[in-house]
Length: 581
Image 1 (cartoon, rainbow, N blue to C red):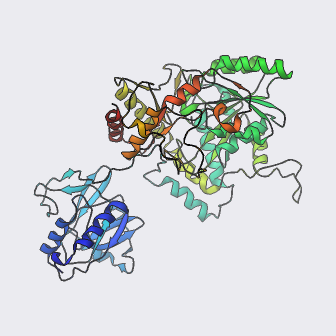
Image 2 (image 1 turned 180 degrees about the vertical axis):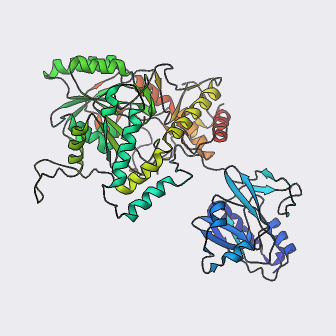
Image 3 (image 1 turned 60 degrees about the vertical axis):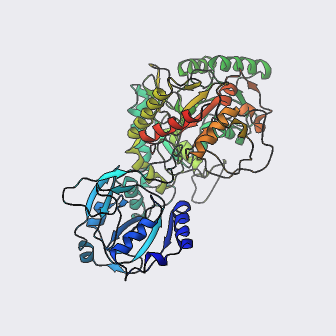
C-alpha cells in the first residue's frame, strides 16, 4: 500500500474521528509497506493527532504499541504491563517472551505517565485516538532515540482538555479496589458488612482527631445511602414531625430543606450574612421570636449549612440555640474536614450530616453519613435506616422505617478514599490560595475567602463574585438559548421547557462568563439559588435581608476538585481575564 492510495475522503474521516471520538479505530493492512511509506502516511495526517502503527494490545484501558510504533504512546500502568501477563490483543494471547522481544523500548516520564518508543516494524493497523501530546526528540518526531538522548515534550494538542468543576479522584495505589475486592471475596455485597463497619470507624477516628473537645471521642457515625438520607434521619432523631416548624438556611442546595417536607413539617427560611454566606445569627433570633409570637411555640429544630465548605458563625448560632433550647442539625455535606476554632464542623451539635457524593471531598460513588452523639443514638438511627424492624422472629413494624443503609461495596470505596482525605483537603486549600492570589488585582472580581483565624474552610468549591458593572464579552448572548442538560458537571435529568428567564437569576455578565468558560472546555456554574426564591417554597415563611439574592446574582463556582492542577488554574484565570471587556 502506498500513501497515494489513501484517498482524501479517508483522510478526512481520520481527522474527524480524532476530533470527535475518544476511540475511532480504522485499520489498514501495512504488511507490504516500507517504513518510509509508514512515515509518510503519518506525516500526511493532521499534526497533533495520535496515530501509532502497531499491533494493539490491551489490558483494562491500557494500550501498548508493539512492532511498528512510529510515535510515543502514553499510558499509566507501565510497571504492571512489564511485570504482568498474559497480554491479549483482543483475539489471541501474546506470549510473554514475545512481549519481552520489544527490547529496545525506552521509558520517559511525563506528568505522572509513561511513554514507550518501540522499534519500527512492518504492520498492522492505524488506530486513531483523541488528540494528545506528542513527544519529539531533538531530531524531530518519530525518530529512534539514541542512547542517553534527552526527550523534549512539545504540546501540539488540537483540542483542549476539559477542566471539570469537581470530579472524584481515586487513589493511585488502588486502595478502593482492595476493599471492594475483599467485599466480593467475602460475599459481602449487601447494605451492611465489614467495609461499612470499617468506614464508620475510619470516620469516627477522623472526627476525633479534629479538635480537643472530649465529646468528640464519644461521637459515633452511621454510614448511609446519601447526605439527603442523613438530613432526613437527623431530623427524625431530633423529633421533627407533622406540623412542626424547622428553621433552615435559604442559601443552600435543596437537599438541606426537602427532608423537612418529607416529615410534614414546615421550613422557616433564614437568609445569610455577607461574611460566610451562611445563616445570619441576627435573623435567626428574630425569626425564633416571631414564630413564638405567632404560633405560641418555638421551632422544633435549626438546620445550619456550611456553604461550599465555609463554616458558619457557629459561636453565635449555637449560643442562640442554647438560649431558646432548640436542637441543631449541622448540614456539613459540603464541609467534610472544614474547621471552626480548630474543631471539625458537623460535631458542634448532637447530629451532623456528611455527603460522599461523586463530587465531594471524598466519595463513595453515592453516599452520606450522620454523626451521632453516642452509641445509643447511633443504634436508633441504624434501626430507622434498615426499615425499623421490631425484635420478633418475623417482620414486625411499629414505626415507619427507610432503606437508607450504605452498601458494603460503596463503603469499600470510602475506606480507600479515607487514605486521601487530608491530601484532598490540602489540595482544595492550595487551589483556593492560587485563585485568591490570581484575582487579587483583577478589578471587578472578588474571591470569597474564609475569616482568617476563626475558621479553616475545605474550599470544596472556590467561588467568585462579579461586580454589577463588570463587562464580559458577548453578554448579549446570555440567556438566549434554553438549557437542555444540567450545567457545571451536575449529573441527572433536568425538566425541559419553561421561559428563558425567572424572577431571580444570575446577572448577564455571570452567565456570559459561564458560557465563555464553557467554550474553553472549562466547567463552572452559578451559586445555589436561595430557597426563598424557589417556586416550590414560595409559601414558606421567610426572614430575608437581601444578602443571598445579591450574592446569587453575582456569583460563580470555579473548578476546584482534586483533578484540577496548578496549570489548570492558570488556564482558568487566563480564560476569565480574556473574557473581560
